[in-house]
Image (cartoon, rainbow over all chains, first blue to last red; front, side, top):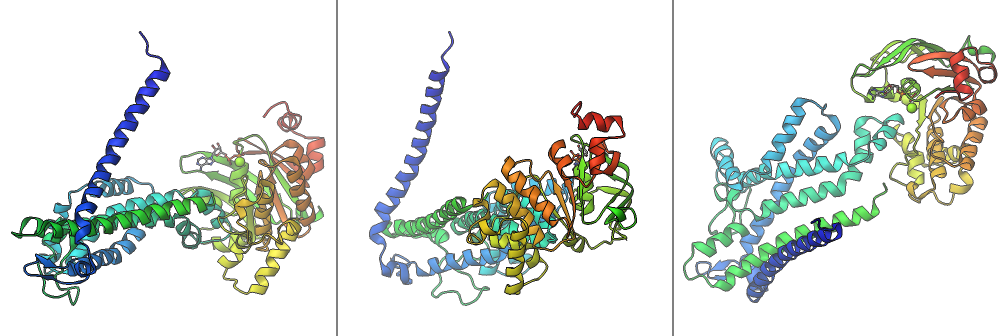
Length: 283
Length: 257
Ligand SMILES: Nc1ncnc2c1ncn2[C@@H]1O[C@H](COP(=O)(O)OP(=O)(O)O)[C@@H](O)[C@H]1O
Ligand SMILES: [Mg+2]
């Protein structure tokens, strides 16, 4: 007996809808749960003051500042390097076995567990280069972890710019660099920004890469230079959830909520940038 | 057409072009492109018309590994030498493509793009170039109040005339056109052809037409290219009225291709 096509289609659609619903529901449940439990803890004192009484009271200000520092520092290192690498791969590199190998390597690097990056950072930056456990070492480690994401999304965005624009620009006496600067980069910018934000979002949320390279359990004051250690939201959350006896649950969820909002805001802005420019796109 | 032989704009001698995959797209071509006239290169697909056009501005070089042999002289100067300043060449030899490709910016920015690449910043010069270019492409009246609109919002015919206008704004000496009206309706096509007739006094125009009829309408001089060979070359009217070679005659009369 043959099942009619329309029936097969209906079944497939229902299955897909169900799977999607489960996924979205799970995410919504997690978010609601954290908001529900965390929101009561959030106050201006919680956000903007130092932890007190063995972190069981007071706020998480140094962790927020630390995560901001780490994210910004990672961006400062990873964005220029990632962008240049992507421009090289998309606009200059010949289509050879060598470049194909590099491309595959980059894609694979993006899949390496973050703890491996942490150990790598410890060995290279903290010990071998003698940067010590510091913001700088952490940023370098996070940058290396983020680079594959930035490079591959930026390259994809550059490649999506129609070749005909390049041909026209070159035919009008443009150099390759002028063409990249004036046509290709501006057109690829939204895609590049999306990739950058998604990469940095991962950097902001990870614990393992900073665990051995610059994150601190507790500091009585904010870091003064890039050679100091820093507190950070994900590590702070790990610490107060597992390492501190008698920790009020409220504070744990409050911290989780702040980290979640941090990451969600980045994610949302990536989505907004993308859809805004897609509507404005001229091709 | 008197001095075509004595003082051509382009002198092509034994030109062969090989693509990196080994395809020989032009085989031992020799011809002379007269200045201030319209030269038509026609023939069936794959004959090497686009390759020849893209040799005149060295755009074939965008395909890494393309090899030229023979000679191409522009005003007596060899443009196939490896040390040639390609940017300077392409400012002298502009190109219009088959599909209109407005750059993703305003009409005004499209018009000034070439000059700005060359470092021109003075507003007065840019404005003059915009007006002259649009006038020459018979687009000024339609565009003068829409200069700040995105170029891609124009109709297909307007876009293609804008592509011609923005090349004219660069004040080139030669204009290459590769089937520039293949995507246009008859009225837009007629407008483009009219512009060409009115500007040919000042420029050397080399065009690949999209039909034999268009070839016959436009040609002051014409060359018939078939599978990489130049089969026949001559003054336009004669070549279409009384082709000397059987293959040209078959093509012109529609028996093949
Ligand atoms: N980039 C390229 N690489 C390899 N072969 C090419 C390339 N471009 C064109 N060719 C080949 O060169 C020959 C001439 O092509 P073309 O100049 O485009 O002819 P036409 O414009 O007369 O149709 C064709 O056989 C075509 O397949
Ligand atoms: Mg062609």
